[in-house]
Length: 177
Image (tube, rainbow, N blue to C red; front, side, top):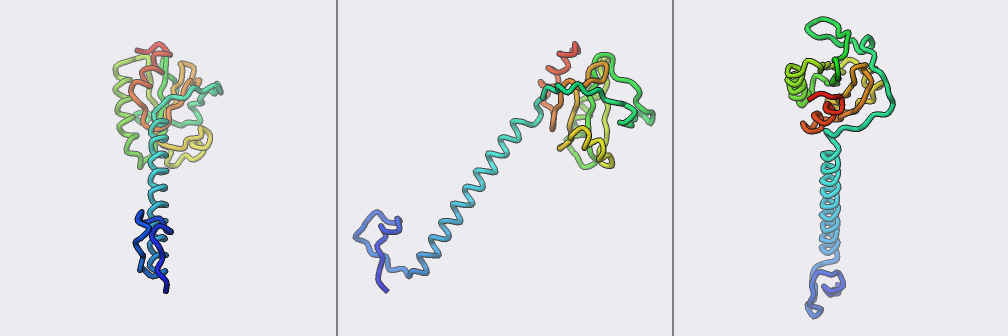
């Protein structure tokens, strides 16, 4: 077995020092270095994806489709009674699921807004057993909130937990303070 120079494998800047490790030991070390590099790269990709997701979640997206929500198809209820009308100026239509912990906080905030403003209505629809609605409204995460005008026309869509200033801005567009 002939000794290899460290400088050939890039580990030692001193070319006069001889590496007496076996070829097998060198291969193991190179494989470990490669695995560590791959793990570090995956961690960086995951961090970048997380930052991207966080930046996009909770922001309003303008909806230009002009779809008018049909309350009959929603089959939403409040206090055991079917919801039959939209808010006088705006409606917050929140899609939730049973396992969504953020949905509870979001609904609490929307109910608080509704109690402060008689022109606003909050409707919460549980999608746990309503895959038809999830597909129709393209709900990929909960909560998803649609901001509707007084006629039920979708004005904006918010995926994830809505940021407070975003809700206020969207309601201000519909003349709700």
